[in-house]
Length: 178
Image 1 (cartoon, one colour):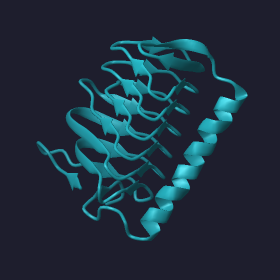
Image 2 (cartoon, helix red, strand yellow; image 1 turned 90 degrees about the vertical axis):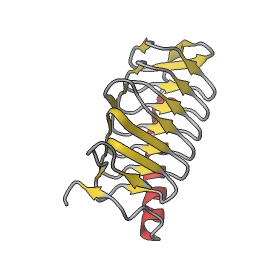
Image 3 (cartoon, one colour; image 1 turned 90 degrees about the horizontal axis):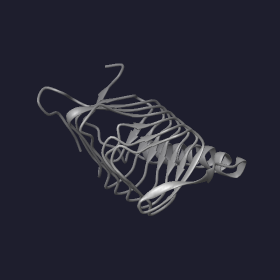
């Protein structure tokens, strides 16, 4: 379901997929080729949430922020991620069940391991492999991590396009080109 709130309507690129079972409300922009899967909630009621190109947000994620939030290109949020950060730069992966708290910044080519809990206002450098509760940098991302990030982003783009081609998206959308 795509909903306007306070005069703000989500803007969705025509090539993006937003599941009919997702809830996207308010000041949200979703970029080219991105996929928003069932059960996801993206709530832009206080500040704008910008989702870049080829981002995939998997089942049952929650995204909200107390400041403008940016998700760079080729970002993956695994199943059931709760993300309240202000910045997740390009080519990052937030593993299944990760929690990223308010005003956190995840720099490019980083991985937040499944189940990790990133504390408020944490700011991790590029190429970080982030693990634990509370989360900290365990090591730098390896070539294997980078290939995984790229592979997951490309794979989920194809999943979103399959769902889109079978008509499983919300038809009530304000595309960039409309």
